[in-house]
Image 1: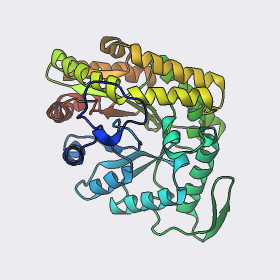
Image 2 (image 1 turned 90 degrees about the vertical axis):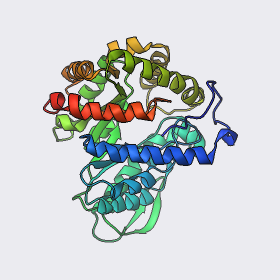
Image 3 (image 1 turned 180 degrees about the horizontal axis):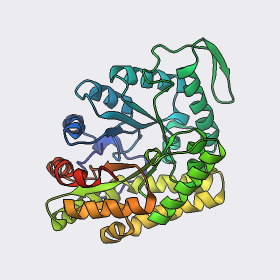
Image 4 (image 1 turned 180 degrees about the vertical axis):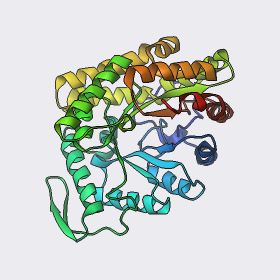
Length: 366
């Protein structure tokens, strides 16, 4: 849910909120929610919400509010919270709100328990070096809050509660399916240890994605379970139009705003975190993340399409792209980010309909 009414110029982080116009944001929120509701009629299995702070990159400071707005206008589509940033928030509150969403939606919640990207820790004044400890403890506490039938106490390193007994509890048993980000080796291992679906977004290239999947599957096996293709989610920017030329023109326009405005300050803040703190568990993971940021910034649209990190083109072209990426990664879930920068909403809605009519029939059985 980006804020799309800014000039094409980069700002430091945090982005000054004097540029924010509540009336314009109100219209954007309505458009975004209506588009997400429309996704159900376009054959999508999930609609996704996420959490970001202090930036026009995303206006979903609390993605659970959007999940609640989707619970009753939709009937079939799963409501995918991808998701709450558990090291930054109260894990009991997350457990309670997710349980509410699962009951409100009739058991359609997909529960994303995310660590977040580095700058979020600056926003909430949480030491980035504690992120892994807080993530692991919070996820374990949330699962216990969902599954323990009697009140219990919790005395952890980062979270302490004398008595926990949440009302409501989730509809899905033993709890809603989990998604945990897994775009690097450390995260892939953690997702597998938690028996969660792994989520990778904005890949640098297909080989790095394949390596994360390999680590995830090996770690899962070592922990006594076998993931299926449905446990591997790959997300990427997507634009589908009537012709390749139209899709590329629209995507290029949207990416210009995405890269120059939405990502500018975020990349600067992330580099500060990576240089000054122990956000990653080892230097190899840190260097891989920095390399991924550098590659993203310098790639042209044509290069990104060739690398298999962007879906863009006519329905027939996108079918070929999906089949190629799936043949490389073997995953079972695509996460399409269809609002890329200032990509026009009418282009987005038409692209969703083209997906339903001319893409989905050719890829749904992969």
